Image 1 (spheres, rainbow, N blue to C red):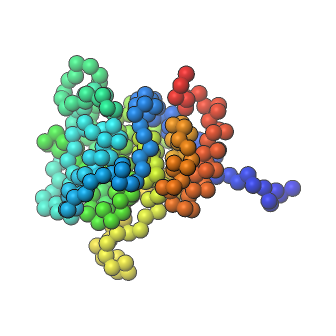
Image 2 (spheres, helix red, strand yellow):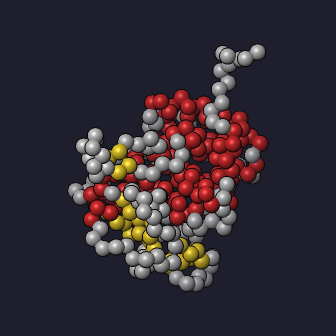
Length: 290
């Protein structure tokens, strides 16, 4: 029998679902499970979560970036933000930066330095890339002044959810680079694992909604001066499924999410949430309690 009218539709390829689960288990091991359980929130793209307004592109980008750092639990990381459209001089060569102490969380006393009384030193030195929006999303360039530089284009501000996901992915990719173990799949999967880590940090709605993004700027037909709102590594359904995993683990009701998702993703999210509930019953490595 062909089961032509079966309602049990496979949401994603089994290997992809398993990889997303394994990424969460990897993130639990590497990036402080307690911070996820006790501090991480579902970040919503609204004025309550992102209050304030600035009159310049630099001011607005800085405001958003600082808010993203706060939700990510990485506000203590030393950073510098560059508008690539105003950059007149070449970016200095990479210099390693050492962060000592906890990497994430409200109580993280991380500081710059070569030694630390407690905790381990983490070397940060991400390579510069030639990708048009940022650095693929490795838009973090360690600087001689002991700050990690993150880049953006002013055009990205036309897509608020896109630039939030852009900054979140930049931070999560840096965080992923500090892990003691490579993500599931190895080094080639770091960009995708970086997105899952960003969703793990609470930014899943923005990742899902901006997984297919329009090109910003230019006249629309000529393509002149255009650049994508962000670099995308997980498609809409993959990002939405990873968001469903987050919401299941955090016991977040579907209604609190669907009103912020694009309409065509809402049904998939509800189905993914049910699928997670069924599948994760046997995953002891993805339980917050016990």
